[in-house]
Every structure is written in structure tokens, then in C-alpha cells.
Length: 256
Image (cartoon, rainbow, N blue to C red; front, side, top):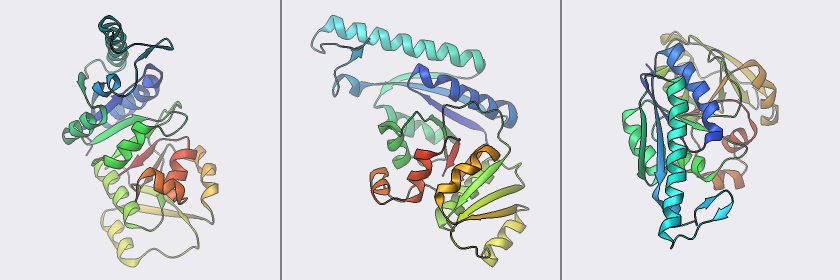
């Protein structure tokens, strides 16, 4: 059962989509929602800090302090918006190596919410590579419900494990649709018996190509898929199933 959700914030322009989804998990599923903003210490070591499009000389102590104040204000602004929507939720602001801190914090949570922008950025790729708990990737889109779920099923172990993790967290679901790609074949008998023992009804759909997946977005409000088998770049270069979905679908995606 879903108990605690961690929501990681980086920029003000992703706050609305994350808080919208956080409220669904809090109000409809009773989850405790905790927000986190990491002041990534690498910003000062790798890339010259910028404010309003101006590169700040990192050797200038005064300029660096100005940048720190800008980041502190951003963190406090995000915290204030979080408190408006999640009034009793904890919000953590801390320094560290951003995603390493998020992954470490995930030890105490069931699920991570992370925003997806117009493309898959470096931070999201890192989360996809190192996360050990389920993640929901939330697009910049108004979401009002979590009640119609589609499993993207390649008949592999990762898709099966993702569904197992999803049902452990969202135990109220008794019916799940699945979308399979390729030739229509009957479900493995032992797998079918397992779902019956769990009182889960699986309604299977088949398509001959992954390109038709966009047609299903209007009928569902969450896709469930298995974790990437390899790193993001390798999967992209080899045209793997998972990367195409992450890049092209504008719908929340549960990955485990």
C-alpha cells in the first residue's frame, strides 16, 4: 500500500505539474507527500553559474553570494507553492550532489515523482539509471485522476515486475488493461493463474507496432512499464521500446 511519496523539484516551471499529481496521490490514495529541493554543489564546480542569462565569475565571492541568494529564493518560492497545495507536507531543502541525495532519500519512501519537460534531460536519465524504487514521470499536462491504467507489456520480466510493484502500492485496482506489441498470443497459463489468485483481471490489447501507442493516451491516465534494460543512450541508439515511450508519450508513466 502506498504510504510515502517523495517529490523532487528543480525549477519553478515544473512545480504545477508535480503538485497537481501530488494532490491526487494525497487526496485519493492517502499518501504522505514530502517535497525536496537539492542545492546541487556541483553547479559551482562544473558550469559557471548564470542569472538572467549572465555568466557569473565563480572567482568573485560577491557574485557567488548573489547566485546563492537567487537559488535560496527559488527554493523558498517552490516551498511556498508546495505548502499552498500540500499544507501539512514536509519540504526539505538541503545541499549535496543533487540526484545522489534524492536516491539516498528514496530509502524512506515508496515512490518518487519527477517532472518531465519537453525532452529527457540529464537528471531524468540519471534517475532512470539509478533508481531502486518505483518512479512516476509526470509530464507538463493537467491530470485529474488516476483510475485508468494501461500496462505496456512486452511479455518480459521487467513489465511483469513493474505491474507487481504497481499493484503492491495501488492495491485498489482490480482491473488492468495491457497493451502487447506483435502477434496475438495467449497469456502464459501460470501467469494467468497468478493474476486470478490476486483477483486481478487483465484485459489484453494487441498492436502490431509501437507507433500506435499514442492512440491510447486519451483513454488512460497512467502507463505502467518496466525499467530500462540498459542505459538511456544505448537504448536510444538501439531503438528500444522503453525510450520511444518515454520520449513520445505525454502521459504519466510508472516505472519499476
